[in-house]
Length: 232
Image (cartoon, one colour):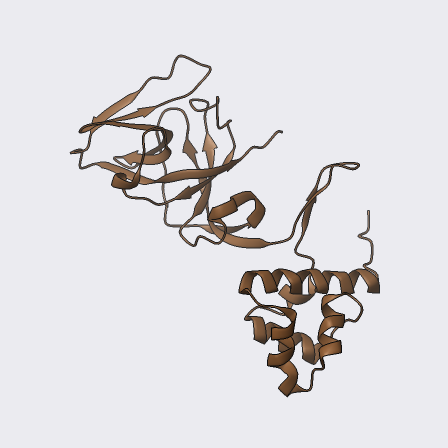
């Protein structure tokens, strides 16, 4: 089915949404934009008409706005929203950011070997899903493979991981760890020098992985701060 052409009104609304989002990200106000762009011959009425969706900026003014906010022209003119749901249950996300995405799976079953952990693509995630972690440049995403954490994180879920030092972890944090390059995701507990990586599964086949803080082959790669479930 061919994609519906966007109307002029919708184009103006897209620009207005994007400009409003950029204001929020930069902690600026509309009057700040006017004062800073006035020297380029932009009137206060014109600035407000862009933000209110009444006028569409000329090409040179789109570039001016992009330079002002330090973004691409497409960040001004293209629709950056994602909508999900049906009928009246529609949720719109206005702010998207790019995060590293490791195109492999981390085991939530028996640990598996992951090659090329340093190789990654990027993935766009709405700020609304990450909450206080939105914009954190350390966070990376990967998929979970297996059922040892399926009480919380189902198989094929997408997880967001924030690198942390072991001293920063608290018992019950969910972590991605490795031993001899075998990576896994489990619930973390510490009892003195003893470290416990515990599954939370409906299948009692899975058991604790117990080691010590002196284990030189153990690496904690980060704490899981969010997950997104695939219902397919």
